[in-house]
Image (tube, rainbow, N blue to C red; front, top):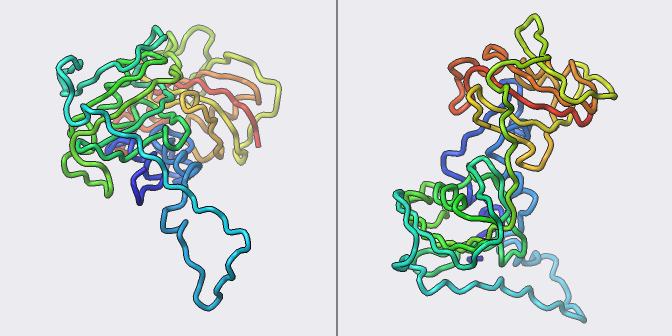
Length: 329
């Protein structure tokens, strides 16, 4: 890893410059919004994996309190190793596959899988990245830990490129500046211009498929006076949340045309929040459930974000959710 880079910065490198987030309600605090909606999961990972900046590691003792030399001095921490850039780091070779967007790629090691991830899937990868002049700026291989993220949460070149891969495959990408961070990035410290990555696709975590009745309440559904429609998919046996309860849930959400916009299943992390801290349709619907239950909700626009949401990027119109109530706190 290049000097001055923390793991937190490294993880944030893969996030797009225009990541959309969907805060659940004006009543939500910022921390809750991070838990509830996709797009900020990598920033949560950053907090979990943040390592000290080199300056912190090299902190000197105060002059007023000098420390005595240790009888058994500890060896200094070795500098992180650098992975040499490939010989073709500056430009793709003639046999590289090129797309209409300008992305170029070449299979380094064929995979054993048979399916490709979609933009809404989550993937686990190992990767290393270099600038055009061969300077490595990031590597999960050096950190010794694979990275997981949603494909619609990263730079455009990754979103497009990883969908070409299958599990077990290693592929080299030459990503032009306009599909990365630009030739003059607005994010301080972001690498400039064309970037070259070696990516190993370890695992695809498939996004839940939209239900057949995503557009309208199906057979066996019920409707409340507010217009909320719901259907019990799996009965529960535990407690029912009160308005003041906090709950832990797994959920996936789709727009009326079947496009998934959020899923804790894909993030592999359930969400915890207050019953009154979310959109009206959730507040009402959760109080119909028992712990252990799984429900499908068709939430009309006036109980969600409206037909023309005021918040940029928030899903519009009727929303359909599958919700599993894991715990009532």
